[in-house]
Length: 249
Image (cartoon, rainbow, N blue to C red):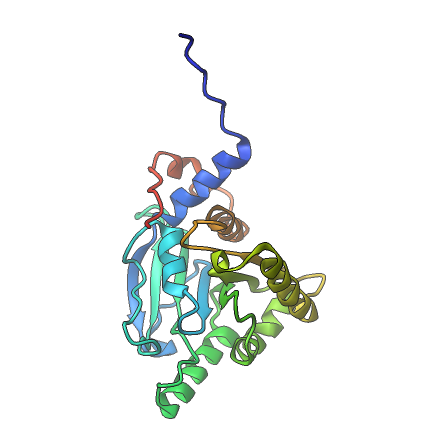
């Protein structure tokens, strides 16, 4: 019997593995109920936003290959804090993830909705370290009026390229091919209205259940951060020794 020599991984696969090693380093930093309580930072910050029940916490946990990094409240709409997570080597973090509260849950009191609308609007419009926004949208529903309203808060910064935008069409495993294509097309058509020569805007299908799109998203976010890196900073080779955990079921 002749042993089979395994095929060497492609450069693309190795790069994706490094990106997943990096997202796996995510760890809790702090939480804040108001924008003024967030620590100032020079690190690029990537915000995760989306309607309640759009799968935001699940998407973050899947990207980080951790079960309980981002907590999903048993009562949608109850989580009313901005949670920050550090990424990269512990002694030299190179980015932050910001998990913003879910929005749009009908049972939440109007006063709370208005207060969080103001907090999120201010965050998206003025947070100096914000470099990217990942908007989670239930692929079966598409962009809702609330999603479009949130995009208005950050549209000016996206147009100049100051803030990058990635829309994840979550729960895509619930769609057949025709429905998935239609969801991508509808979202792409809407985003075309806020895309300029300077902007970095993308949309992709994502399924935490099937783990589809996970590597591509990790790679995109890593590239966002690398674009901010100064010469001499910690190279990806430092992360290569870190094991990549299997995404949780």
